[in-house]
Amino acid sequence: MLAEALEHLVRGIVDHPDDVVVRDKQLRRGSILEVRVHPDDLGKVIGRNGRTATAFRTVISALAGRGGARVDFVDTDRRR
Image (cartoon, rainbow, N blue to C red):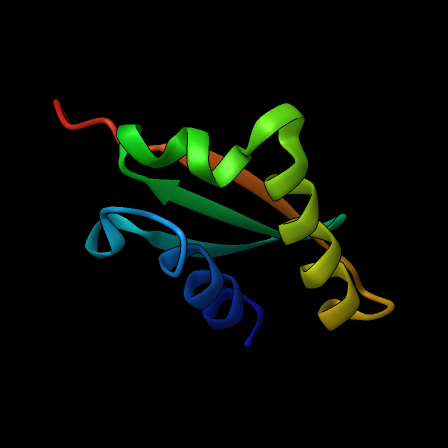
């Protein structure tokens, strides 16, 4: 549920929504949501001084509740 919500939010602000991929990785310390976007969209997702990324993290942590979730933003590498 968290991955779908985050993917929906990120797709709404990027220029290349088809390149947005959100992976939910379960680790011992909790869940990590890895967001991959087009390299041109990385600045939009992070925002000025990281404000947009912080807002995404705030929304996801509120949805996650007690368990919590970490959000990492990564640009896609076209060469791979």
